[in-house]
Length: 195
Image (tube, rainbow, N blue to C red):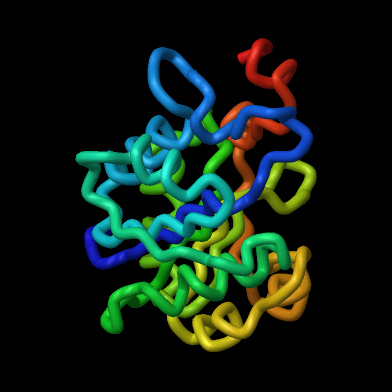
């Protein structure tokens, strides 16, 4: 697991959250992004690249002292695709696979990441590993093998990796997850209050 990387997306403006950046909002006594980064690190991922953009200084301060690396996307407003591309390009050159992790998933678990990494190893380390709901709907974080890195590094615009994932869907390894609460993300202050 320690050879696998993760790109933690923390560049957006969280416009639906209001004036505050949701990633530095308090969740269980710490900034949300620090909570998520801690889960990723706890899973045993070896290289965590945090992509900053909007509110760069606050996000970096929230992660002070953690074993993560930062890459800044000055074009963060162009959409998630460009942030993914920047993060993937910053991964260590020997990284065999990497999770793309939204920074606003407070109920993500190390156990889920470990399970997805285990399925990746079982699948001869070549397939895209996709967590899904039990009825087959794609969720995050997706684990991408190195053979997809060039395509990920070419992403641009607001769509992120969805179009690329559709191209790989026929050979993707789908992993149904019974507890859909792990996929909860935070978009508004009300979402945070409900957690």
